[in-house]
Length: 299
Image (cartoon, rainbow, N blue to C red):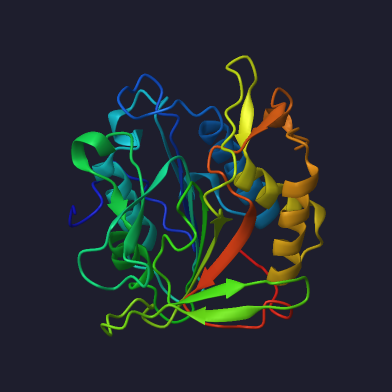
């Protein structure tokens, strides 16, 4: 991986920073299907971060494959450098966000740190040429550098993404009002936690049997995971708990009927939800266990 973000990355170093990545894979061949939602997803996410959580616009980096600037394309190298930019010099009080909307993958684990024998990964626009970015790499770059008082929220709308940050603990919610934390720390003893900060991943679970829906090209669309997250945040009061947020997300996924009802200037032409990740319900993993029904969700 590159050692440091280059000089053409944003110079703003406010205590709220975000990296938003949306990949449609337009014009790609061999193994790619074009996705219609990801680029809209990051536009919605940027609006949410700025309007709801007070993120400065110049502290949000967006990478998408509709960009003309070669340094804003979601190539493997650019994504890795953007992740480094996000956490570089992080300090107490920083709130960081990583959002990826696109394709995910599973590959055979070669270092023995995965319970199921597979690494999860995200697919850059050039993944067939340079390979995907594995959960081990993501964990090393944006999880382990987090010092005390720094929090990272990652929202990943992709298939095979339930544990794509390789965090030590996975939260299961068998029914509303209950939760069970699973210990996913590798038997090898490899460190997957932070340096004192907190990392939380909100992603999607699929049993592998759900249908992956692709909207017709005539419809502008938004990803199912991203839609449920943004809609739940908009509808719930400030200070909503993680448990209530996940419950609201699941209800939105079940009841949306494939229709997008997000509000806002960029939402006007968006009419359909594309479940390109095959997600059935939201999942949460974290660098530490906590009471999801007491702890407020704050970015």
